[in-house]
Length: 112
Image: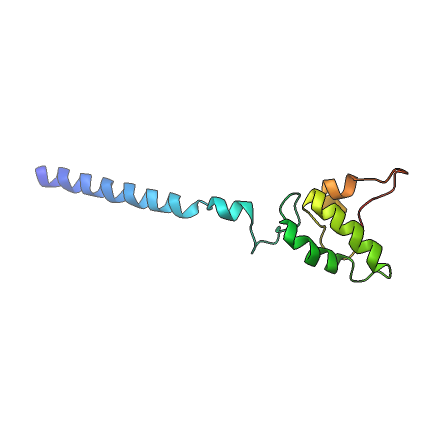
């Protein structure tokens, strides 16, 4: 009888360890949540870019325009404020609300 009870406690102990190991492997480290560099969302959600990344994101954003200087100027200004640049070379502004909602005095879009 005592051996059966010891065996049951042993199984319960093993099940507890396995459950804890499985739960800890499912957690995402806090550092990955702040700057998910390998993620598709990096730089495409508001506040996810670091200021030093704005130049490369804006270079791509403005790569197909014939007005590169003003595009780069305003893109970098918007990126510095919003820490976000929409994906692609045109459109997709709904992904970055700050970038999308910043308007000129006349009500036009400030960010390219």
